[in-house]
Length: 135
Image (cartoon, rainbow, N blue to C red):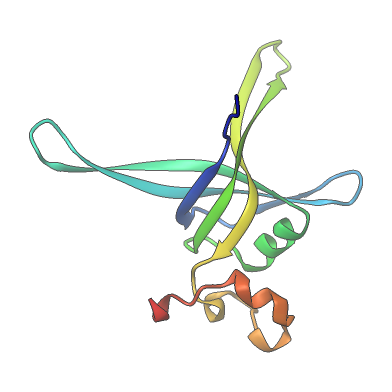
């Protein structure tokens, strides 16, 4: 039987990505995306609940994240869940679940990104940005 491990998020980046580099010089970007869930409680009153999801991007996606993601930017994330087990010094184990980013679309306008000049981007990069003024 097939199984599915797929995550789709549209939300705001909570702070600038934290960047790391592996021993093999591969870049990693760690960031959190905030999303909201709206529902009605038993009394029929609309409630709002924030969820903060840890995300990790590797390689080219990490480089793009470092270049264009800043606090407050709206992004579309598509990826899969991965849980890591971290052995702490006191002998306990910490389980950390993250979304491993497979697709990243910047929904905020490109000109909002610091230092982003559309004229110096390769033509094949334009599909990574959706201009929200057209919707």
